[in-house]
Image 1 (spheres, one colour):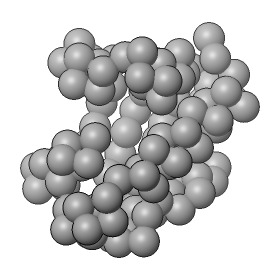
Image 2 (cartoon, one colour; image 1 turned 90 degrees about the vertical axis):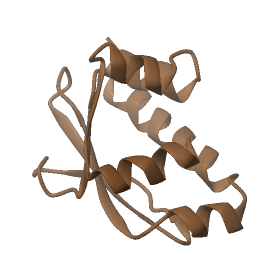
Image 3 (cartoon, one colour; image 1 turned 45 degrees about the vertical axis):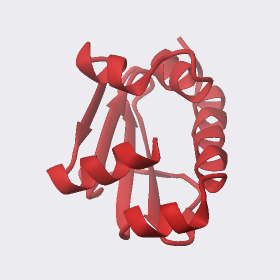
Image 4 (spheres, helix red, strand yellow; image 1 turned 30 degrees about the vertical axis):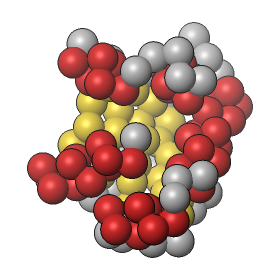
Length: 113
């Protein structure tokens, strides 16, 4: 099981990777949304905000339901996703990654990932 610091580093890696997306593509497909990432095996939830300027740093929050896009993933899977050792589509299809969002938001995020 990955620890909290490894998960925080994984989220930062994902944030950095998104900052490398072509700004025009990013702006075209992103609308401002709050995002929460719940890691049940650690009992921690991080919150961020995605917008045309990028993805804000993740901060710990007490409310897992306050995100407009809610992601639930185990600690090891979060680290594997960040390192590109696990494909998001495969993780989602096998239930290792859960995403609660509107269909429109899912399609937008899929374009960026």
